[in-house]
Length: 464
Image (cartoon, rainbow, N blue to C red):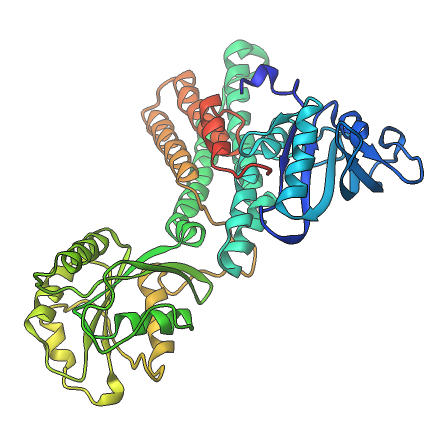
């Protein structure tokens, strides 16, 4: 939807998941939202929505075009600009079933509303200035948060935890630009700009950007989760390990080799960090066509994983399939999990270290839970260096888009610094300073292109 006509339509969508539930919500936003709903609303007390007070709640029924009752509802009125979108917004609270929700939605469409595009309510909040772009992105992160840590981080960004420092840095860069342009246009009145003062601002902002970029990997982990592959030959306890991490019997465990033939995936909360853990088929040479496909998938997942949990049966000596797999794990971010420690250990750490000298080794018993705490601690340490303090006001960059914009801003500041050191004219310095300011503006949406905005909101669910 083009930016110049986005305000003309009144939009509607179901804003709660479809299915059976106590309550479902149909949301309507736009200049005609209240009048549209009012046409279908019947109040037993004769009230009309058009004269309702802001933030009022109204009991009644939604009627179809034949004045038959669709559902008993509670209608909330939020008048512009005191609403999520800063437009008139009506939220129709229905019974949470597919039929009543769909019936109310279809009635709104009959009355002239347009079905909202994915993320269009939040997009309107952004275009009306209620949220900046990084805050709008945080909305979907709050919805999709898998752990308390990732939720706290998303809430902090929604509150402006990233936006405000970005704005402060951009404000300082715009101040430099204004001073340089004033000195060029009014040299007699203003005088020259001191290169030392400009350099001080540039280096301060460059340091702040470097600190932000240092958090980007941890931020990505908190938002997206770590792709983790559990690999090993058949019957070493891979499925038992998944069940242990998930703390429920998610995967089938038997004594028969090759039980797991397809990939089983679970999101696991490990010390506040989300891990997308995949249990794979046992890796071995096999003539079984179906099992061989599972082995190929397991190898592909191992190659693309952020973290590999390589499992061996610690109660017996390493076999040829074990040793071949250990060689393939070399150079990857991995943990060697020596399972079945409760049966006595026949595998020595020294023997394993011949293949994986720099890989941590953890002994566990997936059957009894022995070693689980140490394994979880090692898992977090391997991917996030022991974690990050998110209890205070720590600033964390979570998105690749933000990271790229910050890197481009840093590159522009480096170029401005080099220009200053060479003693070149200030108007040349201003070119790179302006580039840095524009890159920072991409984070908050002040300078972002329309196609980027469209791509961001297309990732949202319909109704948000």
